[in-house]
Image (tube, rainbow, N blue to C red; front, side, top):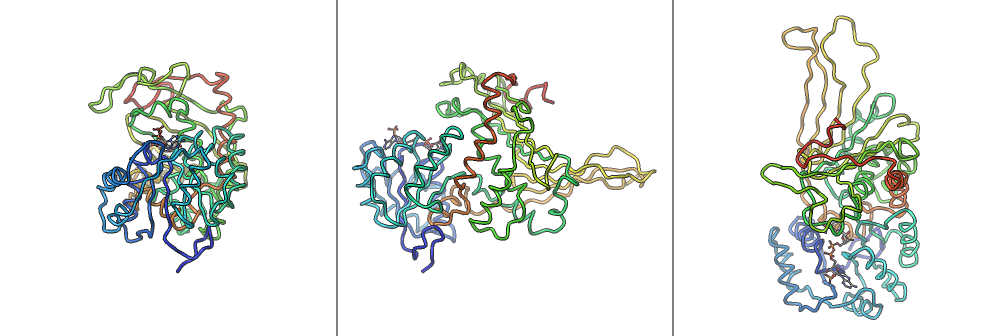
Length: 460
Ligand code: NDP
């Protein structure tokens, strides 16, 4: 028997209840992630219940679970499929939710795979019920729609359960490639002492995708690249890249360290204009011909949604004062460049006689595929006094679990280390607010780029 950090209860079979079991997230990410966990040596002692508002049967639900589990078969997965059940319920209705909780029993995790507005209604409905003591609540992103709504959602959650029983899911925290940052920084004396304003000129955190809208206009056209990627995922990556070494990687220390560095983070210019935005026009990626973003099904051009966003940030603390952190993410780009790059300052003095073009030393941590590159200058082969660039390259291990498998493992273990703490979620909204309001006022123009290009020509 083990104790769960969040609930303090001795370990018993936990019931994972997916609210919104008929949705896209459940089929595409949650259930395959769960299958990867069940097939891994870590496994999970759990029961699964699917809840949605449409009429269905246990058998039909089992078939859907089996289809989503197909890529990672295992005996444990077969057991979960055999025992899973379906409850038809309107989760905004307290009586329906009471039925769901009764079916789940005492050790339950509710996963809100619901539209954000429905999640809010379900949380309000939960307030009217007596909740089992060890219940944990897993909420998907977006967490609120701005700083004020994130704060009020946090207040509502505080009335339901203690903070350590709330799991604000951001699957980037479950990515082994992002977690690699911790080992790389804090287990190697050769990197960590150099990562500060004394030595680093700038830091870039880039997550470019070749994927375009892929039928997700309903969500994306209201969010855009800044909210979809930078406000949540990339600011969390920044926190891992810039935080002070924590005493441990338990939930308190790690999340405390993230909160501390994010509290010191602000847009480079307080008015939010140290930022750029753009939208893709028609173009070709590989063999795929893409229409302009505004011509994609479900897009309302009057929203002025950006598909490429960049913002520059400052961190007002001893370690990072004066170093720009440039966060960028976009869709329908030529290359899926996804990396964190620390660019070092030039050496204070290059010995006279050493010549050649010098490029700055760079530490590059690839997020996909997981890799490590150190770009250096060394003496050349032909002329030993001429400098040549060289790159030291290592492939890093990808984790055994998918990011959602990792997220679900932590929820089922009751360990909130890899979930976003309430104050961190609020900080992420605070940091992007000036940029959002500058964009709303059109203080930053929206550029265009051809799908499949490297971005707007004026940005190069
Ligand atoms: P969907 O709209 O595909 O699924 C939501 C499900 O909830 C639907 O089956 C819907 O039923 C059901 N539902 C709606 N209202 C109720 C209600 N009152 N009672 C019971 N069931 C209800 O959304 P997604 O799966 O795409 O997204 C879910 C959450 O995950 C969102 O917060 C989203 O931001 C987040 N997310 C999604 C990602 C994705 O790739 N899809 C990625 C990352 C996060 P009906 O169809 O009848 O409306």
